Length: 289
Image 1 (cartoon, one colour):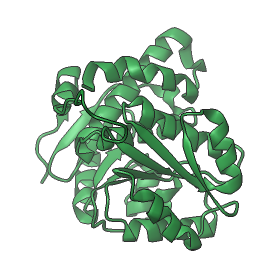
Image 2 (tube, helix red, strand yellow; image 1 turned 180 degrees about the vertical axis):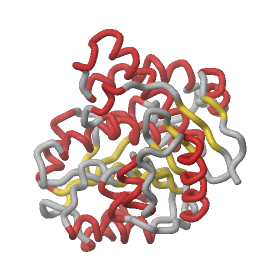
Image 3 (cartoon, rainbow, N blue to C red; image 1 turned 45 degrees about the vertical axis):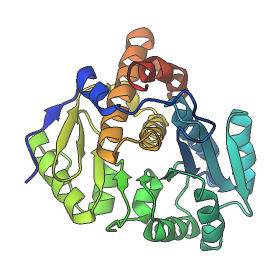
Image 4 (cartoon, rainbow, N blue to C red; image 1 turned 30 degrees about the vertical axis):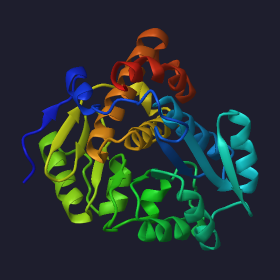
């Protein structure tokens, strides 16, 4: 049975960030992320991978490497010169890329699997195989949740589903349930699958099966496409900075929601996901040392 839930606030989030950056550190010592995503399945896929990657960097890490199929990879490169994109032969991921991606992963502290991955059968098979063999911390988002449905994880894993993705992954239908029921089901799923879950919703539920945090920041305007990729990137960046998956997910959900609330106050529901990227430093500065 999970403990009594804790409502997140700035003071609680600040307590998670205890590690200070050394003034003598050099490139790579303050976190390296690997984002695995992008496809030619739909035009927006490279953009989703790029936004997730830029969110990692804005979280405060030194490096973000993107592994993507070749053609989407060139598009991802065009979003920013700050992104290092490793381009894999073909227009979609497949199991033949497993060895290459694990080779790239050697330099990373954490991997994000899923942004813009698409539902191509080969890509989903690749994602499941990668997650199964992975030994490092991993964040699983978007269509990678479908690929990994029902899995139990041996390495530290953070899943970031909304209600439908949660049902696809666990088989548990939670639409229309109260928050107490959702907390119980999410905690049970975290225990069963040996992972941390960030269940996105009106109130985000973050649990590792033992502890539960509730995030109340955010608004209905954040249903716009791409905000989940920004959130997943923040989660990944904070893990690279040394936070546990539970604390990284809690901090990411709180900050992402705060940014969304500020954009709502300024722009109404007309904001888009790319508006979030430049707002991340204002909030990261409050917490990342």
